[in-house]
Length: 272
Length: 168
Image (cartoon, rainbow over all chains, first blue to last red; front, side, top):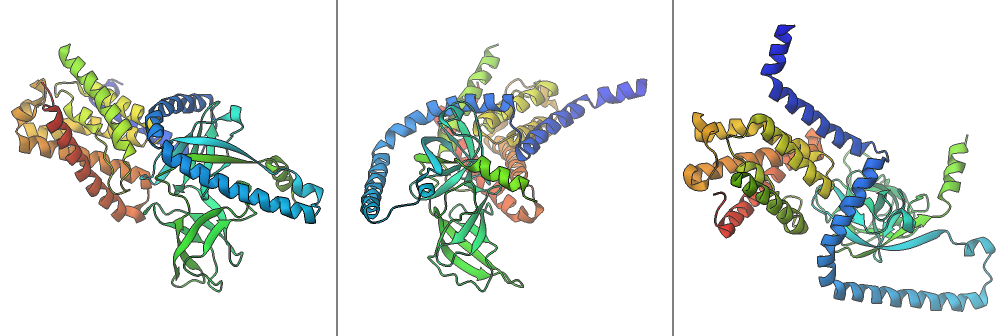
């Protein structure tokens, strides 16, 4: 017994070190297998408040650029409305197509990393604004990321530049589906996997979200093919994409909530 | 007490610098600087190992909280808190734990820089390794460690030159 105590005493610093390391590693592990907790929600709230205050400085200097982007988008949407009105005179759309399927909430990015392997972002909207975990984030150019968890006024998400995020995608030209997943090396290059070799892939092809995904509306751009090679020994392409979104300059984003998500999930869960 | 105050001020200064400026310049995945390590580098050598470990742990926790890195920096800083006495002994000899403050002048520029470089390398390697956590990416981990450590050391040198002193 005394030997044991002496042992503990002699190595007390080392044992404390092991204890603290264990705690730190459990934090890393817990961030992987994720569960919502009250502490975590509080943490998002506090860190969110801090980053909102900090990004206030940056935000001010980018107002002019941000304004140009929004004006351009406005013009594009106005054009779409005009086209739609012209169509409405000729076609009577069936009821269900007019029902809203997605609700969009505009938000500002207040914290965003691009240099890590697991890049995260923080937005200034939370559950009170209808932003909840597992909603998609897009901007005027394409897919930005996915919200992972929300507090009342803030939400934290994984950017597309995060090795843990996989997004269902398809080739706009042929409709073949694959999975977009970043390999964590170069932030100007994301990877599209699972496209069979017989499919025609050309440099410059657009990759968009497909309709299987419950996170994003279909046909939102993800990236453009910059390189395509056959993976040696397999029948699949290795495709590199240039992201549609410039992750270094994110301002306004929209969180997209699929209003039918619960319905679809219930159906899928009850499927035999 | 005045000594403690200067460390608290340094802690706040490097955290603000890290979160407001360094973390905002996102140059590349291979060039990242974590200048907040300066706080651990400059802690007094006669600090007990227990407190060194606890302070390093808390520093990592605070940075993780604001940067959203989930424990990676906590793990790296705790390791630094544990190994710093050994690193310091390499460069200052046996009587190191009687020195109250570390200073560039007392240690000599060459020795001090090497000491800082070793601490930075250990920290950056741990961070990049935990971030990838795969042995297949090992060459990337090494490349990132080397590139970013050089970047951090250059930044630290600039900070030291601008503020004119590292400690009293």
